[in-house]
Amino acid sequence: MTSLHYGLTPSALAARLLDVIHDSIIPLTTAGVSRGCKVFGAAILSKSTLSVVVAATNDELTSPLFHGEVTTLLEFHKLNSSLPVQERIDPRDCVFVSTHEPCSLCLSAITWSGFDNFYYLFTYEDTRKTFAIPHDINILQQVFQTHKEDPDDAPLYNATNDFWSSWSIAQLITQSQEPQQSQLQKHMQDVKAEYNALSDQYQQSKATQAPSQIPLN
Ligand SMILES: [Zn+2]
Image (cartoon, rainbow, N blue to C red):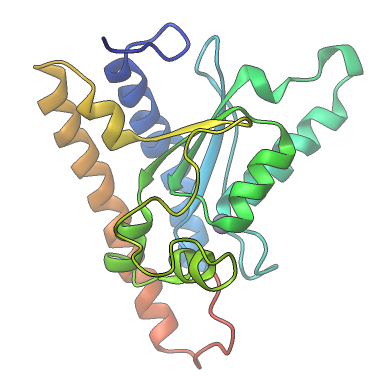
């Protein structure tokens, strides 16, 4: 039986998340990449309406800690702290979507911020192979000794735990029925292609600069 997410079918949620990435995150990431920042971005949505509460993108020029997920969380906290206490948004009433599977820093930041879910477009393997950024996997293996022997044999973190559950958009699409499944696969590939073009732009801009001693994403 296909499980619902906040009353939505996996196909309905996948379609909305792809639209949010395309409409709300890619424009921010396009501007960020043109400034020399990485392609990673994120957004926080209301579970009840799936409207965007905040969206943001990587800002590594300001700080190597400002990953797309972190800048999005900071925007959320800034918004929330500006609201009267009784109007503040509970993270448990929100959906967290990230363009890329969150790294160890962002997994912790999402957890500490109190979200009970996250979804992502590109996996760690995509990030390593397509984006030439292997640090997510390297840090988990080297610092946390996560499945150091065979990273392909087991997940690098606990995708469902006491704090949250997480899914790739590809997993949502796999759970979808036809004809939506084929339509969503096409939609996902189109969105991924836009990111791949932005990544090429980022890598070219980095190729003209001196290599960093501490390669972080
Ligand atoms: Zn991160």
